[in-house]
Length: 130
Image (cartoon, rainbow, N blue to C red):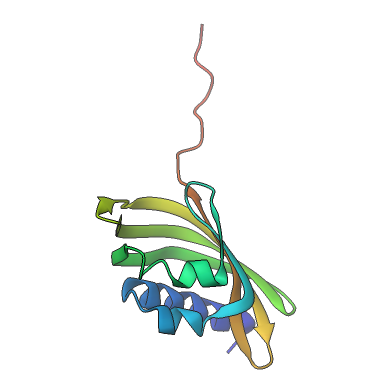
């Protein structure tokens, strides 16, 4: 297996753990100094990321579409589209988002050091003729 394959597997396992709302599974995939950026720009520490489920986050579906990985030695960057059916404290937060993941090699395994979830929108079209 290549580093890219290993990181793609990490992304698959992470998205499955998120969909299962399983903080214990997610915990085993995050680096100790993990930082997560949510779709509204808030930044969460590892501990804050893990407690989301206990505080009212419910993922009904959490899928990373078209993940692409670029390796850089003991680090790798993954980019894809997050398609989620999610609610936060009873309010629907479903949608499609751009997701960027930073993975780092720790010994013989890969961990997520950072996740950034942001808006997904079409690129601007050509200027309007005036």
